[in-house]
Each structure stands twice: as structure tokens, then as C-alpha cells.
Length: 156
Ligand SMILES: [Fe+2]
Ligand SMILES: [Fe+2]
Image (tube, rainbow, N blue to C red; front, side, top):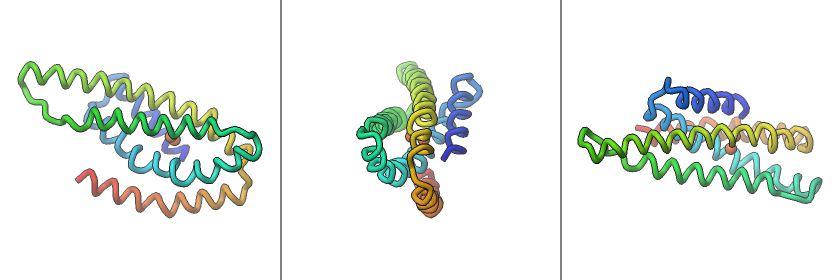
């Protein structure tokens, strides 16, 4: 999971520095939505939430993380769906808007990864028992190729 964070940070920074085309950036974001977010939402967070509740009696971090996943998903949808922009003036400004929205998305992703690395993931390191960690990483390994295959299909 942390390897994927490094990759996400690289992609977001490349886009923000202007060295990556927005279409390519959007494809990379789609991978995060289809694969990485799902692993966190469906494996990592459900396993971790009760532990957090037990030890710390709060569950704010997972709620924030899941909320951010949903808002990044909806900004992706709003950007990726109007894919029709050709040469005419009115539509060209739409392309500019899309690039602007991609910039916002890249910044949100950077903050999101930062929050996970310094919040949720460090809490997991501290509080999740080793057998559960092993269990989670096993489930992630099983689910990863399935999600990646579905992602590749969706991109065709
Ligand atoms: Fe996440
Ligand atoms: Fe993440």
C-alpha cells in the first residue's frame, strides 16, 4: 500500500510540475480509485476500525479517510465524464477547466496520502496486532490482481 502511495505522490507531483499530460494523470487517478481506494475501504479500514474504537475510543481518522475517498471519486467523475473537447473556442475553455480541476485533484491526493501516512497508517503500525496485519496483507494480495484486472477491463 505504501508503494502505491509513493507512486501516487510521484504522479501528482509530475502533473503539478507540468511534466505530465492531464489525460495520463486521469488514468493514474482512475487506477487509485479502482484499486488502491477499494483496498483501503474494503480491507484495511473495516479491519482497523474496531481496533481503533477499542483502544482509542474514537473513529475519526477512518471516517475522514473514507470521506476523502468519496470526494475524490466524485471530482474524478465530474472531470472524466465530459470527454468531448475538440477545437472550438467554447469547448477549449472546458479543457482548461479540466486541467484546473486535475490540479485541485492532484493537491487533494497529496494531502490525502500525507494524512494517511502520518495519521491512519501510523496508528495501524502502533495498534494493529501482528496477526491481523498478516491477515490484512494476505487479503490485499488476493484482492489486488482481481481489482487490477477489473481496472484494466474498465480502461479498454
Ligand atoms: Fe486513501
Ligand atoms: Fe492510501
